[in-house]
View (cartoon, one colour):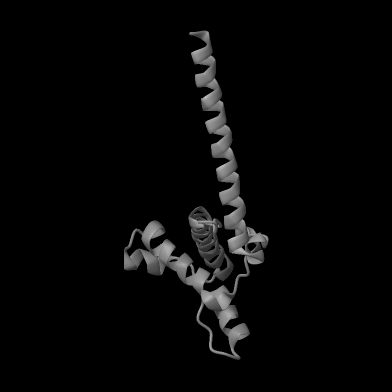
Length: 135
């Protein structure tokens, strides 16, 4: 009875060893089939190339002017909209009472809101990023 148990254990060990050999063979074969391009270092999320033209419209040759307008105009408009809805309560009469001579203050409020939205967008893109090209 003891011999049959040892034989059974020996068969199981041999099967495990055989399965490991087969799996190693398959891995070696698949890495040869993929070729030398698969050994290329993977690009991390932070080292990707970012082009403003992928996200913002700018006519060719006018990029610096348009990006400057975006940098100044978008935060100011967002700040004014924020002041209209959250400070003036969405009432036009209250909104007209606000002092808009303080351009840097309105711009800074909008800049902070745009920055938070941009950071949330980057975090979502990071969480969706998949660098697994193996399968």
